[in-house]
Image (cartoon, rainbow, N blue to C red):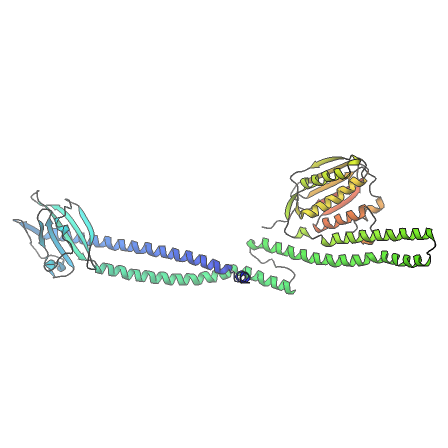
Length: 469
């Protein structure tokens, strides 16, 4: 019961929604991370450039006398002159350490002082971060060679990174808000598009329900190309079931009608047997008549049962069967059955020819046709399997024998459309009637003629299989 519940709860739309949602969130998540990192890198690059400009401002205004640095004019950046402004300037050397600091750094103790003795290198700059006590500073150092051509100094600027990271945080908040809103909007659009895209399947389900209730005969043609093969095969299956039901009704009617005459004959014979118990000759004749009627009834029942179980496989989903291989199997079996006749069988086979349907139907056709050829042929049988040329490519199966053949007056009758079983004679009539029914169910054609060899010629044509885009 739990298994049925799982099957009934299965939803193609839910699975597609889940897959697309995962892909959507992965895409938006990766996009958000990439944009966030790109913005962070841009902000840090901008901070490094700004600090480099501040160093150039210090260089343009500084002078040195007796190892002490002083400024000839007021610095253009006022924050250098404001205590704890968040922007701090330093001049140092790798040998002496700190040589000068800006007024803003008078009461400021840098989180680390290693940069004051760092050997940056003449003409080189170095950018980094200093983290301490949950406070982050950007640091930019630049190495120069002083005018005396001997002294090397480092100009360093530190700036509180909080404004920059505040900007990054604001961007992150806005970015994920926009991406979240976009995700919700895309999910709504995705749901609508999935419903619209899968609507043909829902329409198919409704149409099948109408077919089940008798409101419609078959599925309509207004379906996408991807579903037309499915709808065509479903229509074929539905039509096959209808034909099968019709065949059952017809078979039962034929069976009832066919048995009336033999039963009437037997009903008449039995009172005669009772009325003339002493007439031995009449008794034997009447028993012979009763036996003939019973044999006929047996043939009728056999034939009708074969018709009843024979399905319309040409209209249902079937598999391909190699006709040459199937024919060889039947011939090999019949050669053993009729070994005393020493039949010579000529085989002209197109080994690529295929029958699309139920293999049992093909074996029934081959068995009946070839058995008649062996039974009524004198010494030789010719079998031919080929495909028509051109776009049609129908498959032709022909069997000729050199026996006495079928009388001309029976040629048309043995395959007469709708012929009653009670009028079928013994022998080829029953077998060919079964063959005709099977061939007809595959929309094929069967012709019975006199062979150039003198016996019967049975030619069966199967149409090419139907294909759908």
